[in-house]
Length: 478
Image 1 (cartoon, rainbow, N blue to C red):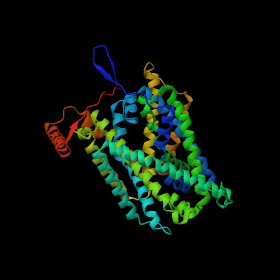
Image 2: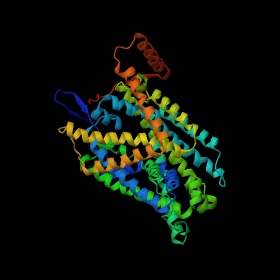
Image 3: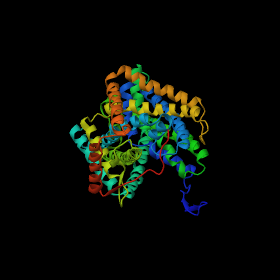
Image 4: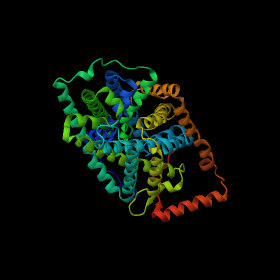
């Protein structure tokens, strides 16, 4: 387990057990989630074109691959956990990093959890309302129950949380295999009527950008790929190899699934019902149509679990750096779960359920998400100039980050012009973090009453949740 170091102590190191094959499986399992069961409607709503939708899915796969390669360099040169937060901190310092975790706390993470939970609610309710849209209150209630149950499980046991993740991952793959095989068979027996005039649609820049938001939501998770490097065999060769193998596979699966959807589901049905896989099942499987919604519901249940798990750890990292309230870094004494962070994440996600329209939520959070991704990649280029001597086991061709940044620029700027209201809200929330940073983080000589109040909250949470403060193994440096 350990190796001897000069002073006689034992240094514990993780064994590199993850092979290239395992790495490919981890990437595919991380990316494929709820998005492919909800985003096809979002892409088609904004393009109204079968051909354009399929092209956008291909382009989303390519863009995600470029992003994954950039993050492979970032993740192997900046090893501190925290993802974008750690990269922005190292490149640009504490204030930009604080703004990143601020928008993650208030927008990105809770909105993602709400979207996946609402997808779960749609697919659970849809079989009971095959001829009409399900009641939105029922969808939101089920989404809330899903969030609360999984938050409780995450608080109780890390082992149970991981078991849920393992068991429910297989359901999404099985659902996609069934959909693709059934859809291709439907095409082969002559049902091609939905592919008439495939390029007919709308192609204005704003609609295309919003269509990309829905497509890229389904590829979410590519920026977690570098988290396996510490346990990956020969990571500096196998990580880029795993990306080049897994990302095209995911893209092919997504394009084939959309091809199957378009073959079976009419354009009007696609635009009017976000639970497109449920409509697909009703059309092809008759009395067995309930199978698809069940598998999709299981998949999205596991998806909410994964987002909750990682969100709580992200906020704990921020608290360890002094950028979040100290109670976020409290972990249960025996269960080693960040109960206060999980509880807070759940509450903010529940507030996002004021709407049941998942596409409004996707558009709302995507701009800030891609802005932070872009800043991280700009940070990678800046570090090449400012810190040329830091270890870079993986170094991508300079063309890749520039192409990626041009695409991100379009994704951020075009919706800002066509939909300024949501952009304004997102920017206002982000900028509201500046006074919070200077008052709560930067200001060192705070009045005694502030320390008394924050200390009381910390001790109250410690006693309420039986938690202790956990410090970071290493501190970030800018």
